[in-house]
Length: 294
Image 1 (cartoon, rainbow, N blue to C red):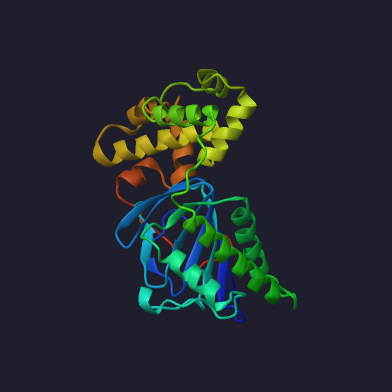
Image 2: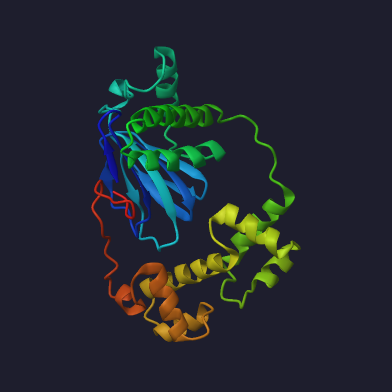
């Protein structure tokens, strides 16, 4: 993580098994590059999918609703110069290149409603990782770049929020078909799925199927199946006393050894450790490195 005095920024990239409930003293914007997360802000739960942008205001407590397996990746920036204890005194950093009228429009967009997760776009997918890199750059010109990037990010996010309610074009037929397939896959993830079988079910070439699944979920098709299997296994470990080997086989794993390796890869724990309740969150909010958030 880097701290910037000129614009008062903190930024970073990475992932964490669980984001404990915490409060940032500033405006935070997160771009989720990969994976799916379920985050809560002020008691409201929102699903954050790959390609989405999630933001919180200085007074809003937020965190994840339960532990998450590795596989997601985000980039975040916190405008610590954005202050306020509530909507009435919320202020943006004065160094940004906004006129007074523009600042009012940005502020109004951010406060418009209670929703905090919005669809990202190509601009934010580029700008947010870029400002993370600039925050670690000691070049004399990096300060100006951070101010320009911060202005662009807030302006673009405000445009997305303000455009809510504008009719959206219908989903491409193949994308809609894959979304429907992925939903149905939750109840059949134990089947011996192969890439060819999944693509064939949707009637789509494997390369195109792989690209669309990655765009929708952030995972490759086979990784998505493994994620669903591990989620089912975690649920069974929590609510039943069935033997671990039985759970592994019922979830589609060919052997307990394969299950053990994949389960640890996704959760960082052994199945029996998880069942005993040792899935405690780790990490301290607000103190991250480039590899671990806050």
